[in-house]
Image (cartoon, rainbow, N blue to C red; front, side):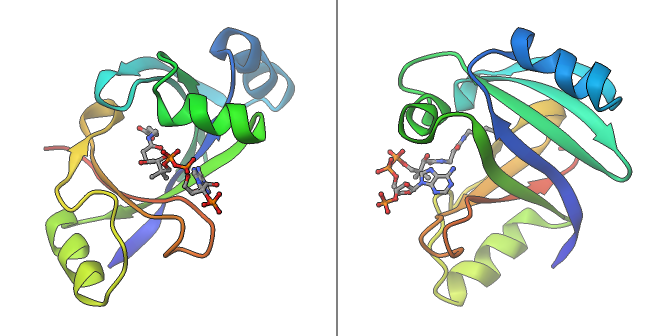
Length: 134
Ligand code: CMX
């Protein structure tokens, strides 16, 4: 069902403050920024091998990332796995009794379709399914 790690999401208070560390100190390839209005976040992507690092900055106090930062401070927010058929993956997981946050895919960054599993089901790790393209 899962083909690779698509990206690891890292919550930050400010993209402008965090980008230079990943780009200049760690030397990762900066792929640009994008606002994902549906998720109330602005993201910055870095390529690292076949996967990416996604920095997440909240655009509203109601953003799940704003709540996460308030509770935990900056840090690893979620792991996203690539799937080829997101509807099939959601239905298989839900059929196995896994608690899904999204039973229908939502829009993610770069034209992806995404769905989150609840961290209570995935042993404390917020887990995302991610399908490239539409
Ligand atoms: N990783 C691990 N656990 C998390 C978490 C995270 N990122 N976010 C919340 N939790 C935990 C909380 O610690 C809490 O645990 P306890 O009950 O043990 O205290 C529990 O989940 C519920 O959290 P909450 O703060 O009470 O409730 P929220 O209203 O914040 O909802 C969640 C939590 C996961 C349902 C919500 O954050 C959500 O829907 N997340 C998915 C969407 C998202 O994060 N989008 C931003 C990413 C955008 C992108 O990648 O494009």
